Image (cartoon, rainbow, N blue to C red):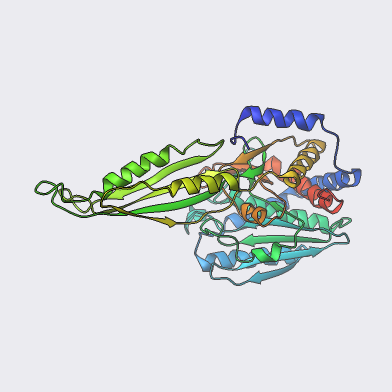
Length: 408
């Protein structure tokens, strides 16, 4: 997968989508149109829900605030006709809400209700609409996506219900967790996962995400007086610096592979040969094969006389690879969007989401289906108001398309 933002890649994808045969049945297109139109009519209701949720702070690891919003979400979804369950976990309450249909497919709409902003942020800069954008902490990442999911379910509940089970999942720890969701095994039976992280600026959905691996190299040498006995010491800083240069050579060794040394520290004092230190690094790649290859290369540590090196694996999420099933979801999304006047493309992202974990479990997963937005994790975070209704239509259409056999 070429780098996110590669204009030649997006142009090629647009040309492909313009020339391929239509793949979405008329009944699915009709459902997407119906939901998009109804969401536009009810946009004030969607934005009112979003305002209520954005104005509730949900900083990671604050169980009281996280659980309060989980309960609010559950109450809202119950009111919209879903059966909501709150699943206790040490990270906070996980929300699973289901809507039964008359079809056959089980489709999950995946999101998270934690944010990176501390308590008190919403009081200092609450939700607001300014022109064609709305602002507030977590409005794009990803309470806006939860608003899309909730109103897709609300509107599909009043339609033909061409799905077997529509499930909304919101987790309390996406921003801080280094492993998969605690209730991830409950999704293994899903036919598809639609992740409601925000669409990229310009509207692109995300059909690939890099996997990541973080690690730390520890060095242990021997201290000595830097002036009186410099050659008696074994300098941990020198060894780590040489390893940092070696690792930097892996950056770009394969297409899209990145390796950045993100921390380097050693030393006990200004006049002491450093006897210990550590190096941290961030490794990312589009495919698991490239990630595994690069990790193996990082472990080929050089010999440094008198220095003991040890690697600490800090884990990381797997990649979301654009296989054939993901490709069909992406192409169907683009076709649905074009039909309702919401043209966009697809791209890859260097960042990670919980969609990476569901994809690694073999579930066809498409990401970036939330409202178009940007400036995540900053005071300028925004979502485009005009994108909410068409995104609802696209997501509803994808649910119906999966039930109609899109992935068969």
